[in-house]
Length: 312
Image 1 (cartoon, rainbow, N blue to C red):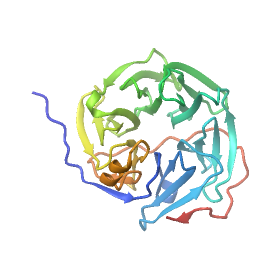
Image 2 (cartoon, rainbow, N blue to C red):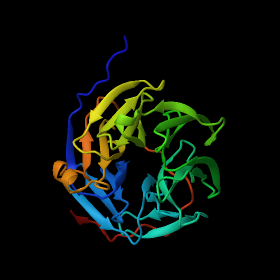
Image 3 (cartoon, rainbow, N blue to C red):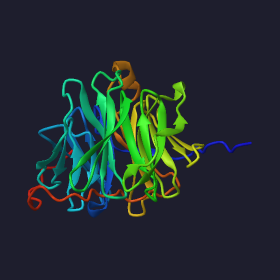
Image 4 (spheres, one colour):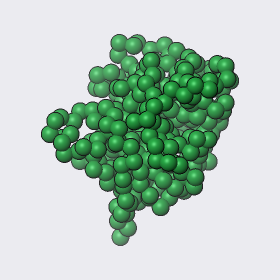
């Protein structure tokens, strides 16, 4: 008989910021901090582990995901482009303007692969038509489209060795996988896991050092860990419905940070879930891997010394 999944992880809300669409937690070791965004609020948050302080900065445009860059900045995906973000001043510099129909599509989730490229996906603004694809921005700034025709793309994420990629078809309630060489799939995407209807929709992913795949469940009040064979090993329960993404952080990469959202919750639901939109932390008994950095050339001058963050 297969072992039952563990559900004993203790979860606490470390930043009750009430984000409408909290997304994209990212461990930034240089600052001993976790960054994440509120897509609908055009905000970027920073939670400092040293003193537990949470700060927020308001941006001139909304970012949907974050990744490190090799020059110390963050890479951020906007609705229709990719930018570098100076974490001191909040200055944004455009790296790529994606040629998509802004009336029907926007960029959603993203992450770097082991070869230094940045993967990101698009989604239908109406969240129903299969218009979204994945793209890979290489270090030389060339961009390759990988057609998937998902209504909402999420993920992507990559195995610790960088030889396998995972890609989420949110409305299809499935995670797919493919072998990867030199940053690109060498085979068509194939099924990894299917999420049951009563468990919500698969959203963002994280990978641990053992190759486990951690999936946030929108409308499912949980994060699920799958082993490399797609078997459920752990479930982290949360006191909120809309769980969007998770990331390992902390000095030993042994703390799981989880973003959540208030979007689509009515007044009654918000009364029942007062911490919706907050950032949560769980000690899950696994260690993650440090997020890979985008290796493209810097597109702006040296970081500014003026801080644009303020305390929440």
